[in-house]
Image (tube, rainbow, N blue to C red; front, top):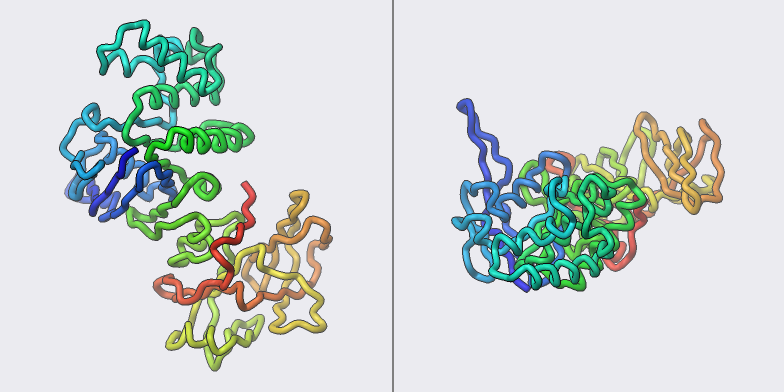
Length: 376
């Protein structure tokens, strides 16, 4: 087990007289055996960060430290770090046995008998012992992924790096493999940095998640902390599926005012947004209530646009004026397109953000221990 530290890590690409900052002063510390997921949209700098840790990309400034020792100026082969790539990067002319054992052959003095013993032990742990004599072209995507994992595991590295290793799999296999991968990491107890753009993978796999946008670290925390207590509007909108709904409203005299509704708020909520004339209201789909409008506080009129039944839950697309919202409701409820309905947003479920900067002014009062409703 090892501790991994990223200190003010920065990567700037220059060319043609211009410079682009891909990673901007990222500070992170991973504890021994921790599984950290770097998540964010395409182009946010997560893969570049991973490549700097591995030594495949030079560092503009900052430091990569493993167990108190700087790795920044070391070659990749000197870092005792194993990486699993998105495309698996298997040698097509080598069998599964040869692919898994290649690292041992190149970096150790083990004889062929001992290498084969270790390869077979790793293959058995991954359930691919019957594929040891097959070539990559004969393997499915899931099998190739296991071979790539085996090649990394057999090195017994200080740190695992994984760059979207499940993205080439179909949806069903991806769900299965993320469960197996997390269980495997728990068993091996190796410090791991896992990169993905899929927030569902981040929520279900990470001990903690680190959310990047435009190269800047937005928030680091447990999945439930980031879900229930987002640091800003970007995190609130990125984490969760379906994503949080947003609407700009005016704030005046303990009221949130929109052309479609006038929402009376408590003194505590009013104090949280004191000094702000306009704020962004956010609410998760599962927190929206479709109610009988005859007796409800702060009713909000809406029109049903579309219903997506998913079995135990339905996603209802709603128009509030010209703004589209999504509600997640029990699957047994029926609605017709164009139907006029009344919504209720419980005040303790509201998130409020600075309309200009997006910084959080108030989060919902739901506990970070509560399970979110996320549909892959």
